[in-house]
Amino acid sequence: RSEGKEAEAKRFIAFTKLVNEADDKTFAKEIGSYIDPKAFARFIVLNSLVANLDSILSMGQNYYIYHDPEQDRFTFFPWDLNMAFGGFPMAGTSWQQMELSLLHPHAGEHKLIDRVLALPGMKKIWLDEARQLLDTVFRAENIDARIDVLSKAIRPAVAEESSDAASLFDRAMSTTLPDMQSAPQEGGFGGRGFGGPGGGMGRGQLPLKPFIAKRIETAREQVAEKSLGFVPQRRGGPGFRRN
Image (cartoon, rainbow, N blue to C red; front, top):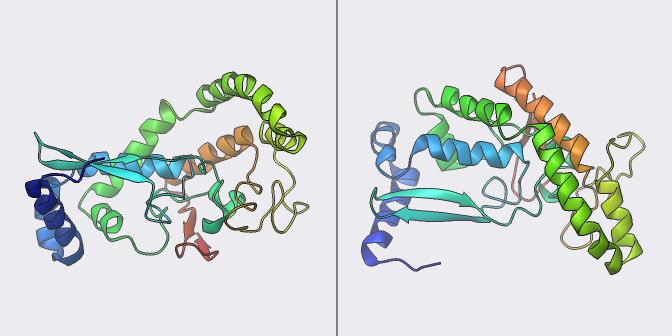
């Protein structure tokens, strides 16, 4: 991480002013000189596909912005994805996050996301990016194979930690979803409550493989514009809308 040079700092300040203060015509004309809108769309779509809400989408954190000195533009990179795949209960339950919206995966208003998506032709680019990821890397067979390799390597260390940790790990490796109606209302594996910092985090998370399979299904419905999906309504809170 770098504090940046004075010229980079001024460039970043100009970027933030464009996002927050410029009128729509100026924003549309100048945003391409600060970021690659298509690359930014891919960044947001990827966070949405993996249901990574402890991020720019909900908490406004866990990402880096890199300034490319040659292009004089900014690129966004995700960081700290340990709450991905529906593991961040403050932004919605795992059940809801399986249906996270591709076009509005963020909580409430987000000026940069909203304004980039409102650019002419950007909705199509946004959904095309999602479609490309779904047709290539974000496929159940690809991800499941990786899970199998990693779980085999990790489980012995988890078992050494505690029997409770091993039990939670094995449940996370289950190939079936628990029944939603019989799941605990708060906390616990498969729970529908929001939990909170500390012990509640991740304990309501659903098994990875069936979560991913359902996530792919709901994302494809959205790419086909048959559903908007789950839209978080505010940062750090349980409100939501589903269309």
